[in-house]
Image (cartoon, rainbow, N blue to C red; front, side, top):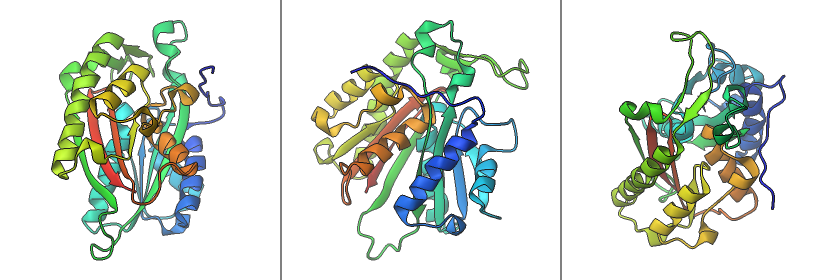
Length: 284
């Protein structure tokens, strides 16, 4: 089987990809766009410096007046955005949220750097969340999310541009060996933290949906958890690394083909530039 990655047309921005993913997510949830009162978009490749990609998405969806903003945690962005929306809903501020990961990484790749450019692709994925009463909801929903970062290690994975430094978008630079070494132990710690917080064991996990960065990291996490490879959702061969979009894209694929079903315990984990990392446990 060949390896694929998708590259957005030059006329498409992250908000365009986010729009299509959001339409699909809303349809799957049986939710109308007008019902959404919070939009959180995770992206490192916004259409503009400002306004936020979330505001552009809001306009494309025809939603008026709701809160909309971006979250920037690179490949961990979707986990960060999910935690953000979950906190707002738990706090009672909002009832229905749209959480999106959307990236057009092809615009920040140095196509002469073959060690980096071949690893990434463009894409978007989305989920719709809604508040549910504590009584009667059982233990379904987002059980907990655990977020971490360490800015001291930013040079392992960064883009060498920005409005206040070079006034250019810049290109991705990565020390692959160091990223791999850090990912394995930091992700393992976050996963252990999530399981311990919910008094669950690795044996109870139905699906591991990892950030699709590197097959060796994915396989290593599956082994650490003692999971059968069939319980690990892998899309990297078809999508490559789509940064914040990779987990929701993998979720969409596994839920869409019937693998992930109601009641399943789903573990998501990611590490990205920042460095940022985190894990989220969800009862589907």
